[in-house]
Every structure is written in C-alpha cells, then in structure tokens.
Amino acid sequence: GMLVKRNHGKQGLNQARASIVTLASLMAEAGWLDDYRSAAISRVRIPRAEDGQRPGRWLSTTQLRALMAAAQQIATSDNQLRRNNTMMTILCTMALRRDELSAMRWGDLSVQNDRPVLKVHGKGRKVATIDLPRPVIAALDSWRRALLAENKPMSAESALIRRLYKGGGIAPMGLSPHSVWIIIHKSALHAGLGVVTPHDLRRSVAGALFASEVPIEKISRLLRHTSIAVTERYLQKLPTENEGALIMSDLLDLDSDELY
Image (tube, rainbow, N blue to C red; front, side, top):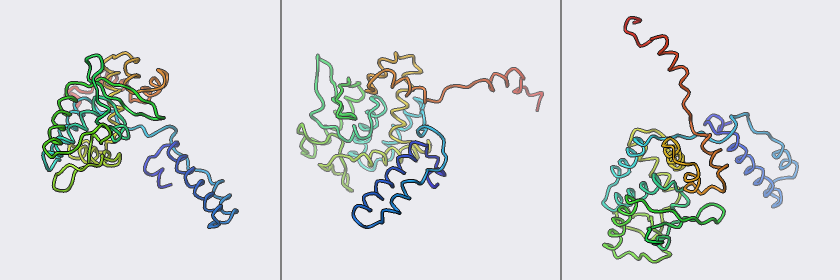
C-alpha cells in the first residue's frame, strides 16, 4: 500500500511481493517462521496499481544541458567538478546504465580503426563497443590529468569513475551505482528539475535521438538492446504529443483578448 501511494507500478509491486515471499520461505526453512504463516504470506495479493513500469521522465536537450551544468556547480573541489563532468557527459550522450558506468575500467578505453571507443559491460554479461564523442574524450582527458596530478594508478583493471575523499582527494575505489544516483538527484534539484533518475537520462537520450529522426537501428545499437523490437517497445513508453486540446483551443480562439 505504501508503494502504491508512491506511484510504483504493477511490475515494481510484484518484485516487492516476490522478495517478501522469498524471505518468508527462507525464514520457514530456518525455523524462524512456521510453515502456515509462510504459506499465508505467499497467498497475499498486491494492491491494485497502474500496469507497466514507472513512466519516468523524458528530459529535453535544454534540460540535459542544465543538468550537466548543475553537476559542475554543486562540486566543492576541482576534482569533484572534473569527475562529475566526466560522469554526466558520458550518461547524457552514451546512454549508459548506472551499473555500467560504475563498472567502467581504464582498460575499457581503446582505439579501434582510428576510432576512440569504450567497451561497455552490460546486462546479462553482454559486452558492446561504443564510439566516444569528442566531449567525452575531452572530459576523460581532464579527469586523467587530475589522477596523474595525485599519482593515482590507472591500470587496466582500476576504476575509471572514482569516489572522492572529503577533502577532494581521489580515492582508489570506484563510484558505486547508488552514488551515481545521488549525484544525479542532487544535480537535478540544483537545476530546478525535480526528481531525475539515472535511467531518465538513458530514456532522454533515446527520446532525443528518436525526435531527431535518427534511425531506430542506431538507437537500438546505442541502447544495446537484444533486438529492434525491444527498442520499439522502449520508445513506445516515451510520452508522445497529444495536441488535440491545443488545436481545439486555437479553433475557439481562446487566446483572444476579447474573451477576457
């Protein structure tokens, strides 16, 4: 019921229910819960909710630029500014998931056929190669100089996007997926955009490309979907224009000063 009030969709509620049922079953096996109660929990149905996943947001390119600027503005040190800029530039152009960003290693960067590319470790142990845009290369070069200035190792297996100490020094540990969420959340609030999640950025990249009439095959490759059909279903969830009311308002000439 609490999740319904927070506007979680049917899929999210089913996932929460499955977690509780699994926990109850494990507790029964351990003798911490009797079988009767465990079975009773498994029969509880979830409250009614809207079908499908959380609709999320589709940010405009102007909003994406504002978010990227805000990520730099909230920085309290030069290292944090460079780290945040690198992270946001990658997310807002390459449509990575936050887990994929967190898993990035310096060894994932390479040059193939004179093209700088990034090897992305995606869902289901799938690996894809994505060309690096010039702004991402520039951000990475700036971030690399910050690491060199502090004599931080950049071996093939070392984390690319890293945590920072309170004083601004660069830590050897990589940035966790949850930390990625926090930085985006704080940046969005600073930019006056409200709540924005990491997946909203991935959705916004896909939406901007689709609105620019980029072929769906290219969008699908960037999103690293298993098929174009998956991408089509993904794009169908984006908010589409429904301009009937706007047209009717124009037909009635409701903007005329004579009506007020």
